[in-house]
Image (cartoon, rainbow, N blue to C red; front, side):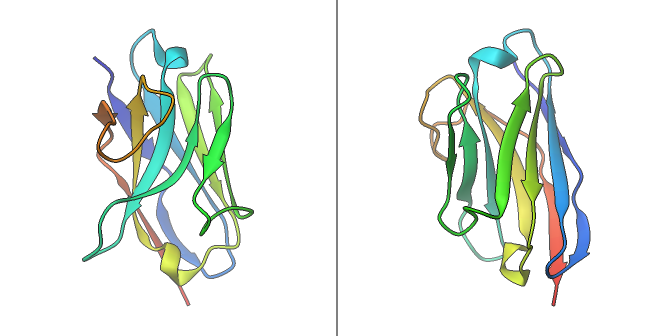
Length: 121
């Protein structure tokens, strides 16, 4: 069993930055692919970024070049550094974990409770 707890969300102006954190419980954190998803009101939950246990990273085209995902296995934590934020980045951001190298919203084994990110124009 893995529990995920996100933090770091908030209100920021367009062009600003935020850093999200996701702390995981359990001793097998390093074996999981970790990912960030987001869900805006009235929209489906969408993939943002993932990082495999090997360190390989993948990004949605809408955030590539602006967001950076990283992990610290010693701290059981995954991060999402978000720069050049846009109003369309406004959403609840969720952390997810899966033992599959490829993560989608349908195969994640564990989800956090989400953290709100609001970008004002």
